[in-house]
Length: 465
Ligand code: HEC
Image 1: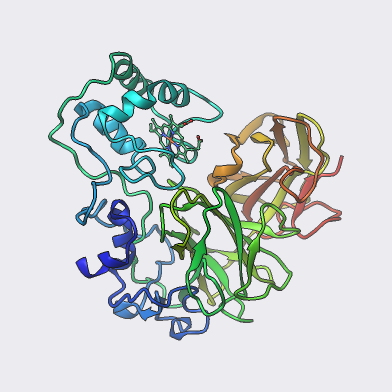
Image 2: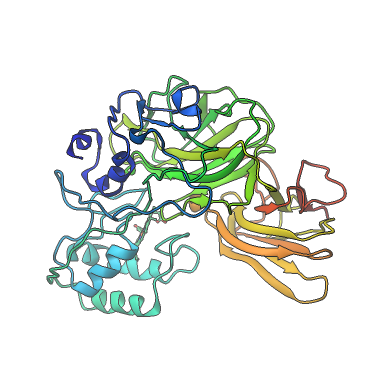
């Protein structure tokens, strides 16, 4: 694989970037961008990556089941420090760091992390802040959706830092966790085709140049690459190109047409578009159950990418999402339903969804969406027969909006109350200094969580009062 190395900006990211390229044969890297939209990939069996045909003809996903994971952490063998392990941490600290921090606080920090945490000196320099953040419920490290440290892990780090973080040696300095599975699998289902929606400068597909604006939110627009063909989404998966500048992304789909290839600064305002997928480092790919397909709105897609470029100007990126669709429509049609409320301007705002379903509705996932003042979201199921169940109860951080698997079945007469908590009471609106309170709930059948009067949009189940 060494022939790929020259295309990779950071040696420290090769551990998983290589995984992305491993299946790609002759990746030339010179004309990447949106793959497949019009190219040979569109035909069920093929997908191009970086403008070159994928080896083996296809990068697709099985109809069910998660993509196979590749050997984690391919070696970070080229120039520069390895992604983890300066070699002078004690083994217990080393293993906590490798498992929980090194995705981002690698020797070359990734995904917006401000510094490396791979050496004893790093723990000495940042000890107080580490202790603060690993115990902070609201701004915890590692951030959502990564698993919190256990009490034992917190105790180990606390003891190490309080004892002055002395240098030690740990022979077993392996590679860190692989944050993103970018391997490809052969489709079990030949009706499934995958398309890459990637950051691009124009419809021609050249990479986007990320300016040094510390926090840039750029929206990239895509006409549906499958044209007017009726399809369902069966999986989505993050594609990571330049992990040194990528922070997280959100993918929206609505009924409005978009200009394919256009892009602009954006942040927040996606009127009447549903959040289809969201990814932050540590987030997992999504695969629908084999009998479920996700309905696609008739308009275009917009991917909002948050960049954090602490490097020089001219960092190039073509990160994005792989969307796999089928034209063999599946019996259970899932859609994004809107829970929450528009009645904001309070510290705590609640909206109850009173769905009109007569049969069961199966919930797969929840994607909380608020703006900068958003701090926490819960959605509670109020059972018709009495009793409540928590569907989701998560801290919210605008910078790491992710989607969570929240399996549940809603029966006739059940209602769902979504409650958003804010740092400061803020009125509803599209811009980031206004607020939102939406839980985008992926559920089937489509429309299962909709109320009698849908004033605002399809599948609206936001509380009206
Ligand atoms: C998914 C990526 C990711 C992981 C994993 C992660 N961090 Fe972070 N960390 C960040 C980002 C991004 C920031 C900067 C934004 C912020 O402060 O929230 C940050 C900030 C911090 C800060 C605050 C720095 C400051 O100057 O205020 C500390 C301390 C920290 N991380 C420690 C850790 C520790 C310890 C771990 C592992 C137990 C960890 N992080 C895991 C991404 C990550």
